[in-house]
Amino acid sequence: MSDTQPSLLPILVAITALGTLTFVAVTMTSFIKISVILFILRNALGVQQTPPNLVLYGIALLLTGYVMAPVATKVYAETTAPGLHYATFNDFSTIAARAAVPAKQFMLRFTSPGEREFFTAATARVWGPDSGLSATPDDMLVVVPSFVLSELRRAFEAGFLLYLPFIAVDLVTTAVLMAMGMSAVSPTTISVPFKLFLFVAIEGWTRLMHGLVLGYSI
Image (cartoon, rainbow, N blue to C red; front, side, top):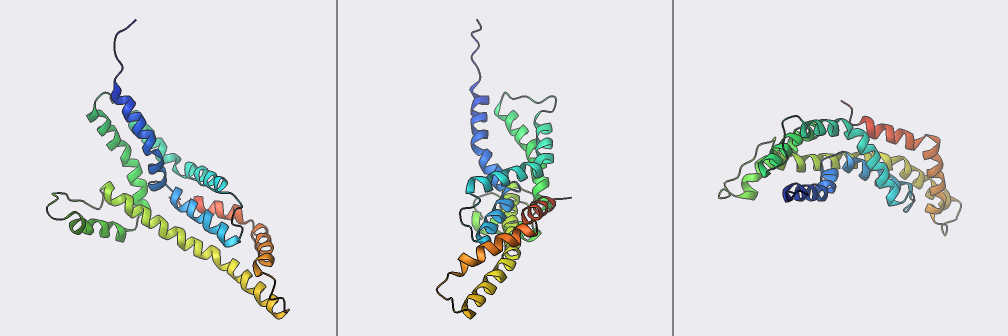
């Protein structure tokens, strides 16, 4: 039996990587935009608990995996390239830097230049002149928050457009009920079935999924 003790560094790195996987999936992928749009759609339909949160998160994860598959393939290729070693802290730093390149390229495609300029310029005011730190528009500390804000902006823009037809249904339903003297009837009770019918009639789920995926086309 060998008396060689296993290295603790790979184990610690693996645990840390698993702990940060959720953070990476939420902040550096298409998950932000897709999940926000799905929840806005549910609110616009007026069905607060259908589909349930677990289903919406599952859909967002599936679409995110589909969109991010090329990036994940490049990251895997960078981290398993010949000649790399997983023995020292410097080795893991080098591998992490190589893996960050495809992710950064993806985020830069969908990041507003204005957001990157803001976070780059704000470093002098936030960090202060005595910190000895500086940042460029291509640094991950600048790219990641810029990407998050850009994705949130696009998600709420899409959510606004999704809300418009359903607001029209609510207004028409309310006007009809008031004209019929049925003010005691909640407009939501009548409008929700019509909104569901409208959404199904135009194949809303299919069109929405297609749009979410194609929104990340090259």
